[in-house]
Amino acid sequence: MKFFTTSQIRQLDQYTIEHEPIDSIDLMERAADALYWSFIGNFPTPGPVCILAGQGNNGGDALALARMLLKSGYSVKVYLVQSGALSLDCETNLQRLNTAYPNVLTELTDAFIAPIITDHTIVVDGLFGSGLNRPLTGIFAEAVRWINQSGCRVISIDVPSGLSGEENKLTDKPVIVKADVTLSLQFPKLAFFVAENEQYVGKWEMPAIGIHPEAIEKTPTDYYYLQEKDIQPLLKERRKFSHKGTYGHALIVAGSRGMAGASVLSSKAALRSGAGLVTVHGPESNRIILQTANPEVIFQSDASDNYITNFEALEPFNAIAIGPGIGTHLETKDLVNRFLIKINDPCVIDADALNIISQQKDLLQHIPKNSILTPHPKEFDRLFGASNCSYDRIMLAHQMSKVYGVIIILKMANTLIALPNGKLYFNSTGNSGMATAGSGDVLTGVLVGLLAQGYSPEDTAKIGVYLHGHAGDLTLTTESKESLLAGDIISHLGESFRSFRENSQFSSI
Image (cartoon, rainbow, N blue to C red; front, side, top):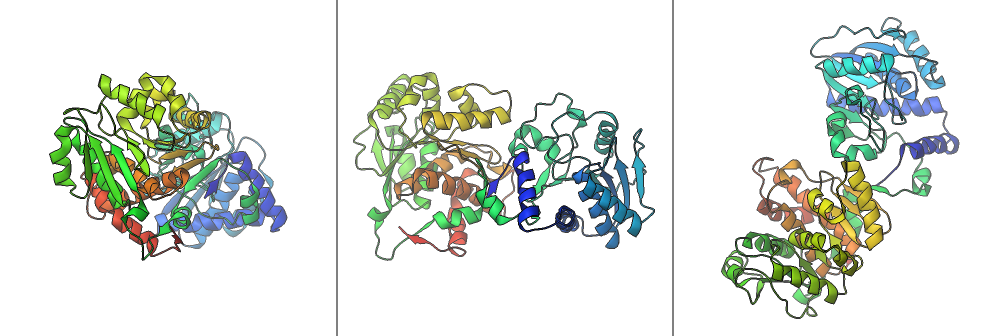
């Protein structure tokens, strides 16, 4: 799904108002209704609620939500925090609330007076929306500090107050609401994908408010949130009269002495992802381990017993991955250098191959266009330079993908896929249990397995990242985040594929 900058969202709202058409106050009412259903989904039992509303449209949403919760039997206290005039729709919802429930609202203008609440009160932050572009001060900062010190569960409307929708380089961090749940209207915000903002955003949901579909379609954006509905149309059907050659031959250059597991995991994942044949090129010391663990895999032995020094002909293979567990021995560095100069087609580059390239940055120029690079943040920093924060790293991936014409998969909580055309895709699957040894090797195997089957590099990246995360999520039905192993992800790839087959129409391969 597409998502947008905060300035674009205001334009989408206005387009909806003009072309549905709908009055702005009625669109606010619709947004409040969506917020209401999300609220009761999180807190279904009526109880005490304290709502802090600001003077803009975010405050108007909060006042309308208060009215709906009161009607459903929740015990609600509302505090209107203001230092200036209310927006027109906020003023309208203030009048509606006072008319229906005349004794629930307190106005705070000069100084913040702490509400009297219980430990079980749900605090709703409706002070500011996503358009804020300055640090909070005065009465609003006092309100935020009280929210954060309340010890209660906190829900923020649209964006935690004090946080911008995109770039956040504020120095006064204590004046940002720390929400447990953020109800982001219709779309996520770019800020939600930045690691440093997790402590403020908490869990986030996207209650739909009926933004005009034509506005969404027409408005250009570089930002996408990768969901199942985006993946299903990309998958191909396996034909009845096909054979193993139909689904490609993948080569994985992987392993060194003591690192056979990288080749085991990546090759098994490639097979489980549908590749017809998989060959591993590795040191002789890895042969018995690999062929015992994966008898379905062909092993191509290097001249060295301990590390990779050469490669045989590359022409027989439909897709190649290089890097898992290969180490950075001098002769292996030379191999990577020769490999990149020789190869012409897109390939998958991971792990130690990336580390070798980071030590010889001129090699970046030799990477075939549309190749897929899979760095974690430290590998990315070694390749392209250190970033001051996660937001800067995302923007640098955006830039470097275009500069070198490669697909960068930056592994993080919502793994980023940066495409050479400038598009950024953030993944919706995966969990923190996947932060475990070998998980990246599995992803490399999934990617090269898909690439070997004839998927385009772009579709390979999207399907591979989503599938990898989805299989990791399925693992949590039998394992915990603490106990999840990379091999568990491979074990659930079949279930993940099957779930897609049951819910989508496949094209022929």
